[in-house]
Amino acid sequence: MEIVQIVPDEIPETGSPESEDEWKQTATMQYLVRGQMLSFIISVLIIAVILMIAFQSVRVGRNHSGFSNCLTT
Image (cartoon, rainbow, N blue to C red; front, side, top):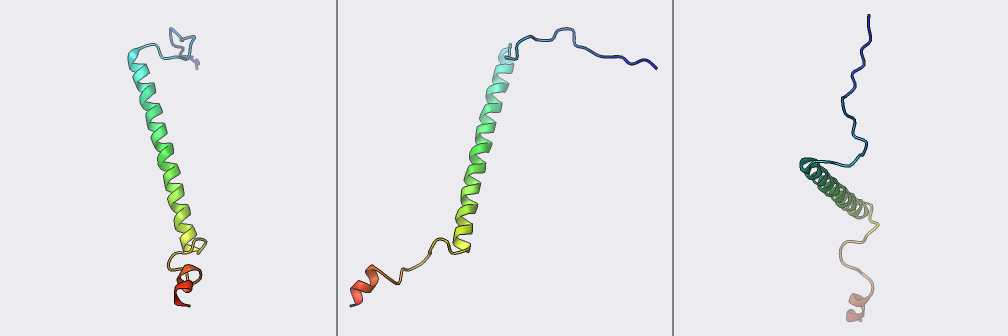
């Protein structure tokens, strides 16, 4: 049994894209990654706000002390 190694004829020495299509693909990937990161950050913030409300770290509703009590006295 013979082991055959397949090697491409030309291996580019630089890691930079050479054709216009490769540049467009790189720009598109960067755009998608930025959108995914922004979406993730927004979802984490929404979940944090919901958890703060659920565990009453943030008061929701009328405040029973302060300015409203000053009006009745």
